[in-house]
Image 1 (cartoon, one colour):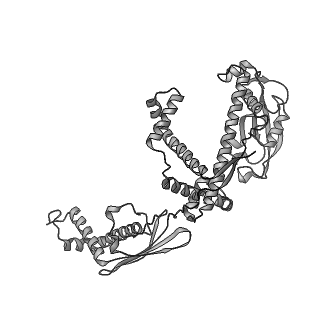
Image 2 (spheres, rainbow, N blue to C red):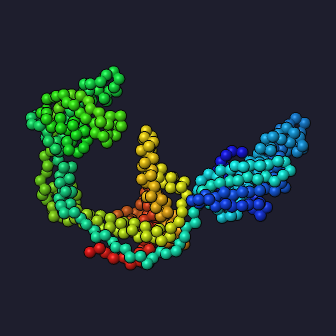
Image 3 (cartoon, rainbow, N blue to C red):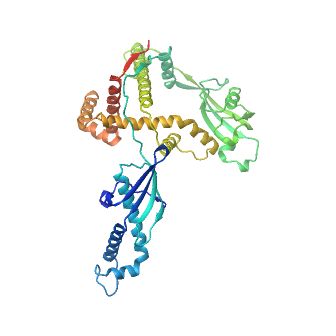
Length: 439
């Protein structure tokens, strides 16, 4: 018998009659559950005979027709294997039956230990696992929540226009003059110190294309480039900052040669009606400004609504607090952190500790939302989804069939379901509380 039995309550057809089992459930901390199960000897014997019959139907023996081999002969040849399979199947089925009969829902592998069995005696074992927590639904309303005021920073429209100018700039090569912020340069970096034989190719001699002022190079490298003119080069000491991604280079310095191969300066287009027409279907510059302003205002309102939802849902979670298993919190944290290969274990542990409160809240919020959706029937129906697809088809002048096929292929149907679900959930919660707009 392995140390971990992954089967839970999913194989109903294979379960024992739970009324035949003697089951004791012990509650531990943070939704940990331990069940002690005793399986009567007659149930184990019945399982053993079922295993014998399976063997008899599969094996071939000289002197016997297939499927007609006496049980005593099967047991004489395969007794040990049959005993092991009997215990394995009995524990698995009894564990599944005990879990299902007691309304438990494991969220981790089921760890089986303390197995005891002697022929002619009851089989007993313990199984431990983290159980899906019971989510209370008490207070869901009566909160006073303020929606933040949507704010579009001064000068935001001009910043976006300036970015559009840069994106549509034409680049002019300059043979003289030192490069400045916004210039595009091509440089050759050659490492001068250390053993070149021990360094990789990218560490010894490499060309780079970059735009100054965008953080694409180390500060010391950019400063050195700004001191050169096209065709010139020089030797410089370059320091790696303490937050450099490669930990082995943090705080170190290297001697390198930098050659400025070329310098290109941007020629920005005029901000006029012609420019507005070149970036989209706009009659003039004022129409472009108006669209940018509308988009910024829409984004600000969406951020304010999102913050309102976060505040409201946090209050609901706090009013219906409950424990969640550490395993669920750790699993959520793993997803947030993602791949962590090569990360210092100590720093990874510090990061986990920092994320712990947010991960606990996120897990509680997810479980509570699921309970609210099910309890109050807030999930969208197929008709709701179809109606939304019709709206999108009309709004984009597409045939419904073509749009539906595209949405199914890209996962868009799930996005529609999720959007409709969130809208229903928060309409429900907001209707039960006092929502005001910040002045």
